[in-house]
Length: 375
Image (cartoon, rainbow, N blue to C red; front, side, top):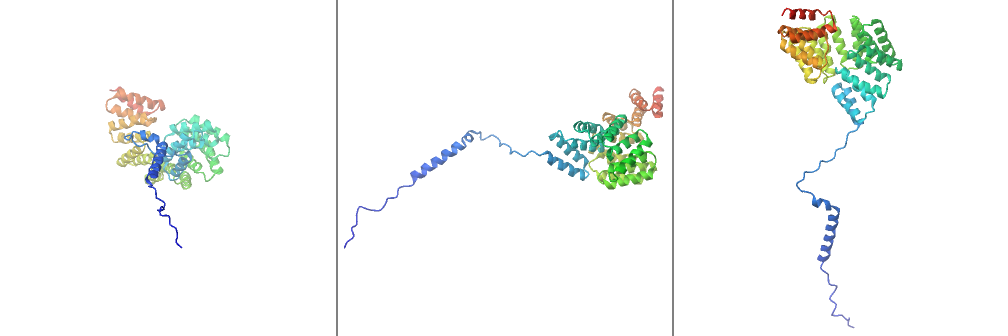
């Protein structure tokens, strides 16, 4: 048997794939063109657009502020708290903390503005205490007493409120009330560093130096990263005539708060008082380098140059201090006398009279006016 074979069958012919491939490529290209049609018209010479970066939150800045504060970097903490209030204008706690730090950094005038915002948002005892403290350190004693009394009325159990009131009473020379309020603050909260520091301040102002030093030491142990207790202790040592101990305390203040001008200013002023003008100038210039707006350092530098009979440099620094808001009898009359010694009485009289406005019995100012009258 033979198998029939159809000789016409030669197997299925394979069609060429290229027409199909070309069609698919056209379809893909068309889809891409539709999806990205606008990019074909972008100028290739345009610069690349920046990659968007996420905006930091107030919570992030708050954490950063607390970290700086705990490390003793008061200047950096203040800036971070400012970013918090920029993003959260209703955050009264951040305003109050800014006020606290600005006081410690030697800018109570700026602190008043921050504290007032905190009080406007929430007139609680802490916010009122910060406002009273700022007013007191800015020399506004009558306003400070009113505000501190409001704080105590708001919360009679607030150690901070009683501590601030004690400091204001001390600055008003009301010694009985000052000591009473300071002891109340410590009794309410013995581990509150502000209460212990202000007890030290009240005792220091009363000349009870040993007790004051004990209180300052307790405050420093409770808050080792706040140098203002060391500055208080240093001032007490100066009052006792112990300059070595004073300068050691001022150095501790610098170590605690290295980005603050206050410790350097205190060490510079203390060095001048102890008879070391070269070190004083170096430290005071460092304070100004850290914060060119810290007027007290310019005033202290003016005093150093005055003691060195360098009238021109004294005038330059005193004038800068005055521009930054310093108001002090000694600085006024030393600036006036510097002009008088240079035979510039037209400039001298203005400052000598300002000294007399603060103290009508200021002998150096009166002597300066007599010097100018003699020609």
